[in-house]
Length: 188
Image (cartoon, rainbow, N blue to C red; front, side):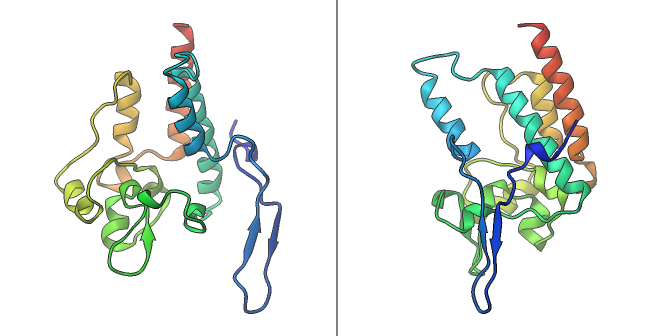
């Protein structure tokens, strides 16, 4: 079941006249997900069991549950990393003084500033950010990662459809990933 437990709660919001709003979030012991996964990847060299494929799929289910909850409530997704320079190499200005995570944006977001829950399911990898839209229009997609099962890559590939209507909804992702996770657990 998807619930708010998959979301980081806002502790406090402070707004004062003439000041930018401030949002206070709880302290996360392990940091943000991107840093946590990078640390786990580094740990793999010393301990191959540091994080399993089953763990990664379980995390993906939790993310999809949280996103499904937000999408059902028509919540706008923002990028808190823009508030601080956490990952400066991930953001690029495309000539309009707006930094964006170009490598993670859907084609319609890049070309038309069209954002929706469908545009929230499309990640891409290292390509020159100024050429991203052309690559996507030409059909470029990332290659299947090493050790990524075909069934899981098929789910990922659905998220990269050019037509937003052809991309899965987050609840569909939850279902597909949960089924895959159960099948993966049967082999362990």
